[in-house]
Image (cartoon, rainbow, N blue to C red; front, top):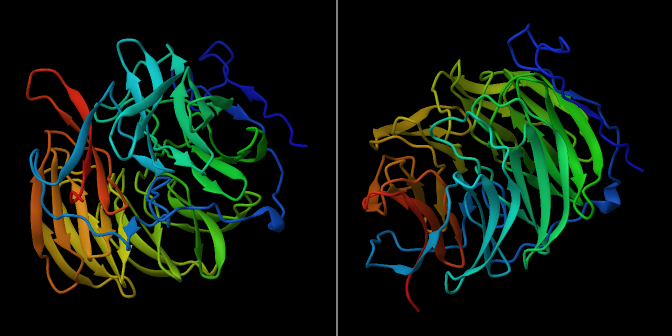
Length: 440
């Protein structure tokens, strides 16, 4: 039913298929696949109240509104359990059916793995090796070979890795068995790969923007067959696709390539696009009922609000650089923490600045808000800042230190906060997963 995706990754210079010329990035030739999913097949993916099943949480907007967790913790306070995590990774915890899923990479053994832990005890239930060898020779110093967050649908966990100059998608059962695995296409890496998969209806959606030729694809969750595949510009980009209901319709949203694009998630056809932001983005687009919000920081810098009704109307924009962390849309306002540790609050309707403040430190993790109207965001140095989600002023509630490195964003569900950190205080780097909450 679905055509086979044909991939041609020519050798640099040997076949003279390059983007600019000999010595530059080789071209990734990918055939587009035309397909669609009928409307009757688009059914909501069941999500339990105690689940945080994918990047940015169940509502895809990093809001944990039914949750209440402690504002302060330490190694000896409000830690329900702590468990060691092998290898090195930046993926955030994905939680489904009482299990926690993480990706990791052992750089010495050159293995990429999926790990599964028990939510109640922190015990590792299993680990499954997906790839061995063929690591990229060069990645950014702040990333790892296991950056994208897993997505779960209640039956399977979907992991995406860059390995052997290609993007590989794997579906695993909740007991660690591989259901299917597909090399989706080639990938020319400059600094690694970071885009997390998105689930929609019967599909897992994967973005692979790279300098050899980007592409966006939807795969059948049951068997890995490509349903549709669309080419994108040959520009490196790190943002994750987000499928949300905004302005009365489901839209697949992606920033980067000097524009923000809305696609029809059932077919991959473009709904609308607006030139904006910059070539390379990292943060995931956020939204309210009628607008989408995005930011970028390389090489240009901009934060923008766009009406999502197809009119391609820019509601407001400013020149603020927010490169790696995602924005947070909550209760009529946009909250942001910049890479260099400055906090902002803007009116979501007008873009008027309500406050700005200096948090301190560098940030790569993204903010999350709880039902207590508290924002949690961790610095790269391991300090989790808690501040109140109010437009009146910046109001710091607490600062909590665990380890000395945090790049992963937290998962918040079941009135617990799950945080991945690293500690190098004893001379060697060791990652840990913490479960933070009030003991019953």
